[in-house]
Length: 186
Image 1: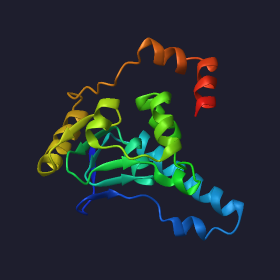
Image 2: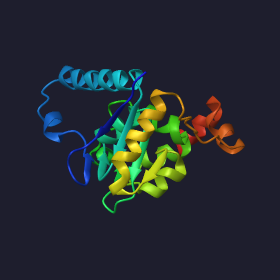
Image 3: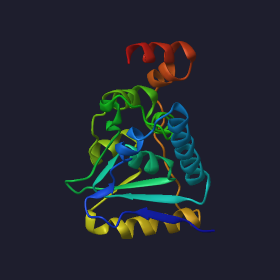
Image 4: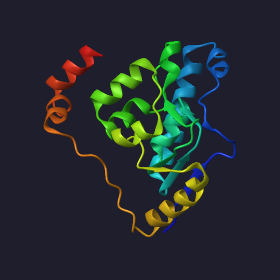
């Protein structure tokens, strides 16, 4: 079995998101739909393929966070420039490549809605506490930690521990009535 690591060659920038000019260049509704479909297909391939570790250092925003969310395992560096978020909402856009589904699946609907609707940034320690990332690493040890995690995923020695929902989260998120309350609040 095999696994891969996805890291950026740029210092302090994992993936800063899509180019807004690409969206502005769309002339028809069909142009926008084509871009969104391609984004969904790419993220679905990433999610369904071999295990991939996202080694996040620096800005991981918008489409960049959506790429990381489609990965199997996420490690964020504790560097001062590392930040995650979905700021496109501040431009009137919703995350268009599955982030509205993958983010809540990891952290719960209640927590995710606050970030999806405000575009607020998330620092590494907060991301770890809420379950958005699986592990933190010093920036100088990030690549080694990611390679170690990839080996663990490949040989199945790394067991991914996701946070369990408490009873209140389950009551609000686990049934249609609770979700309606959350969405109205948002």
